[in-house]
Length: 166
Image (cartoon, rainbow, N blue to C red):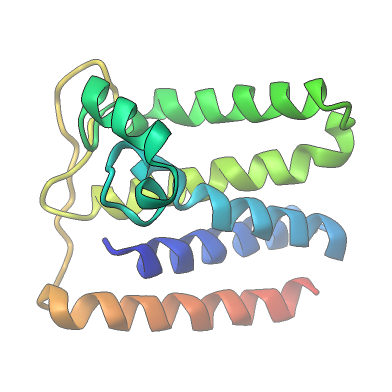
């Protein structure tokens, strides 16, 4: 999946989570912000990714140590993101009760990225360090048509859900 599709799917999932949780507008906005950011985080392991090009001093060592679609594309990473973001916010003096929608949004966005990559033929090592790759190649159209259609559909879906949330 490309960056635009990951971001659209992260937005869709975050807004859906806000709707399911009956989140008030501020909480929904924090969920959405976290979902957008979290949807890009797994590709920190790829120096040529959108995020990797912006912070190569992190991306290159992670890529060297784990490779692309290694630990950052696993359930272990989702748990790590939850605890690391909660710990950072606590260390910065932010009350976790107020910031938890942002932390939850990061995890929802992160998980949405994993689902998106799970849908590709390359799959993901969901249970890393177990080397089994999980994949569900459900693409019915060729990639040149499927990605743009999915991206547009996800943005429309996120907008529709947002109208129900706010």
